[in-house]
Length: 419
Image (cartoon, rainbow, N blue to C red; front, side):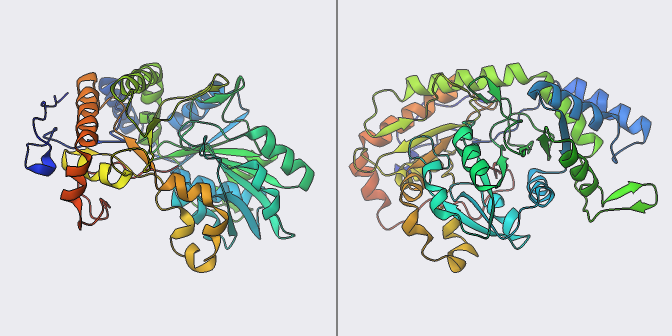
């Protein structure tokens, strides 16, 4: 583990960056390297690399048992998982979802010529506001796609009550929420189905992958057909499908990650507590916390920077951190509704999304996972404090500069993330 040096002067003013190597939000967790290599050797010896091999089967069983769901269908990635789940439940026309999510959530609908109808979020939880859903429903609405953000489940009870009254399908993008729960129930069994991401940046990863979970037998059977081109037999195709299969190598990484799950969560929880201490008392800086009914995985350390109270705005603080090789992320800026094709298709969407706009302008996610140690967090805390203490000087130095928008990134960058 690399150690950070004590910054005597901010790098913005010519000092040495706090870290010689970039610290990312989503530095991958690896788990037991020896056990992973053993599994890989076994896969090569079997010469069974994909098409539902023993490691994929075991991974699905382990996930299903952990989450208490009847069916887990492994996927090559969560985006394909969303697309298949959307099609399998029969969503068409229009679907209501938050704009404050990774763009893949909206694209999974638009790709299938389903219109995403963006709903505002609760400004405290950052998840879809159930109180604003019904005003968006039309005769063309067929479903609601909620997003469990930061490991915090949506208000599933309210969403599913709306769906029952209006005869709508409900899916959840659970990319952030593996291992999380609400009110004693684990994420995985809510709605008609839930879709998880096991991308490299997630605290449990399969290199690249995802999964759909459901308690609906018929839906699970359709999903299994759809992820394998619709094959119902060796030479018999009975359904329109695609290629959503997870490989054996990916499943091997997933099983290895699951074996270290408790350690990964413990590190995340420790990091969250250390950030809480490091940032305590900073004016205008709010660390996202969780309430007693929630079971978080602490995969993300999320700040809200209040521009009216903090000495610097979120984007100014982000630029300071990037100059120190602290690659903080502006999730999910600027909101799906302000990206193409959605800003052209629904140019007035921002008028009904005031909370989304405010939160998107304030949120900053800090590096965590096993790639960050307590000394790193202490250093990041000191950098943030120093930047805020020198707010006027920082602001003057940044005047006229472009904001920290990581469009072109170095080849080492691995923190492109799904919601």
